[in-house]
Image (cartoon, rainbow, N blue to C red):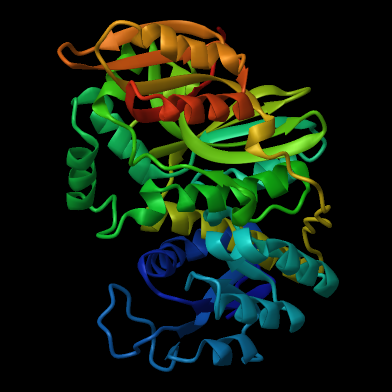
Length: 432
């Protein structure tokens, strides 16, 4: 179909019609004419691959559009752009590589795919001279990848730090604001649909680690996979940790952090105590936000819905429009070659630390515990005793110390007879 003032139609093949895929089809129907008015291009979804063509869906494509063969969609000569929303590593990787080899731009929201095989896919897209776009892979509907790739292409990014998992942020918000335990907050998140029946990917940091790998690769131009990311989740965070942080003016958040340290890139995901005044501290419930620090631009923050069908579909649609416009112009937006680099491991970093330990409440305990800190050159900034009776919980905030020294301190404390249990270790961000 060709309209006055348009250059024609671009046919789209969609792999997957779940939550995000169905929302994308709906958005395209709603915005089709407006997109054509702005770009001169009509976007038509002409093939859709699903697991079960007989399944009832919220959107009903015209007869002949649905198929259970994703490979047939990729190979269809009439399909000009492929949108991959099936998730997982395989067969998504093979399908994307086949589409790129056929000269077809690809739009994806698949964080696992990019965090595992991103460098290979970027290489294939560059050789084929077509787009590989993935705004929805990190931060849902938040425009984040494009600003890092384009608006900040000339910037020396020093740090990217953000809340990139809505499930864990909701859990920590409820623990902070309602005094809920971790288990209570998780159950509430599951009831509301924010957490899966098996929440492991979210609460143990796997989802955030994949996103951290993608952000680090784009921000610093180096090869990073999710296996390179130091990962800790929130399942060990207790109500005592949350309360103690609050008394000191901190909130606990699960952060993905990628930063340049002495010429090396360090990437990690773990709970952090951040000052109440920090912009990320105000990010509540299931929202996401990413804080970017650049040498020239200073501090930027991107905030919004980090998940959900329509927010993520909005990001996919933005990429799809860019891919279609570039295709018609015979252009593409290359990512460039990601460099191989030694990534700085977490034990070579330094931080302030919060540490809780359970001890026998008897004379000499404090001296023994303090001796272990001193033995490993970890200076105690503050200490508080929580609880009375035969057992007590000691909570510490340290001055800045080496990660390796702090881990040696924990091992030393664990070996003390008077220490019943070493509890939470949480890194602290902010001035001493």
